Length: 156
Image (cartoon, rainbow, N blue to C red; front, side, top):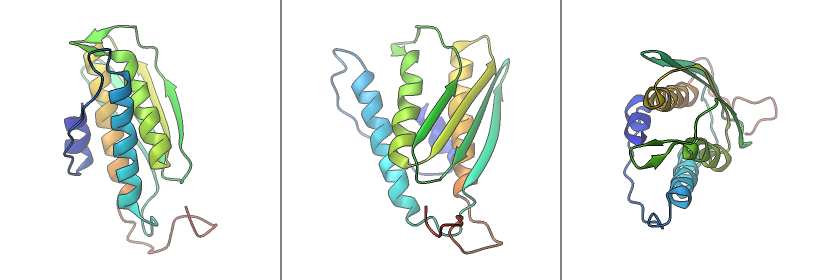
């Protein structure tokens, strides 16, 4: 799913993670979200000239995911999807929101993930990552109408 994030978000991502996966993937997934979120925040700097907000949707066959982001400097995460306690391969699906939570808090973004309908678990998870990637790409893109920090307070 991280390759979906990189591909559809149009940013380079190289990652090498080591964790206690002999126990479970929880800490490793959370740590990956933390590290990528921190790198994202650092790469954005003062956020001058970015669009800041984005609302995207990504379908994958019968599944639809919507991601809304605000690069606000305030980490917050809302997850509107009911996922079963299940696995895709060896991966616990309940860790998907853990990744998004860790990313949002450490990147300093407000992130809402909405999944109104789906049947195939793999499809909805992939749609979430594609929608998230597209939202990040849009929110980080430069707004040619201004070179200011997109805030009435003058900083994010």
